[in-house]
Image 1 (tube, rainbow, N blue to C red):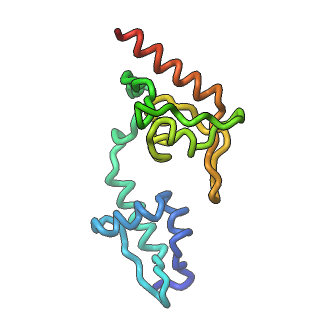
Image 2: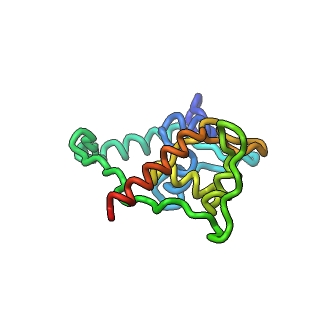
Length: 163
């Protein structure tokens, strides 16, 4: 080891190469990245090895790997729509909503018969509104009633338009 050479801990390595630790360890597993050494219970990398890896990868990279996002087709909005929500048990009516302008995730899960993970997925894929008050530490997330009702109306209108 050269005099004055640094040993890089993982946070410094991440800053230097611009990858998160998960990508670094995937590359190590694939044999594409220097594995470093375990020293006193901590994994460290020689800066000279990382610099050599950067130079090799830079030289091997071609300029055509750069994506031109201006010409990249934009993902289309999902065309599939959900049927209007139905209560889990058709014989019973929905529980009456809380007397508030915000509905908690617990109520919405009961209303639609789904899990909190499904509500979160619907916000990304089905146009379900975002929670205006994210939950945490045992507190359920909350949605504004008007947002949820507008989403339900949109679902109903789309279903009627398809008939």
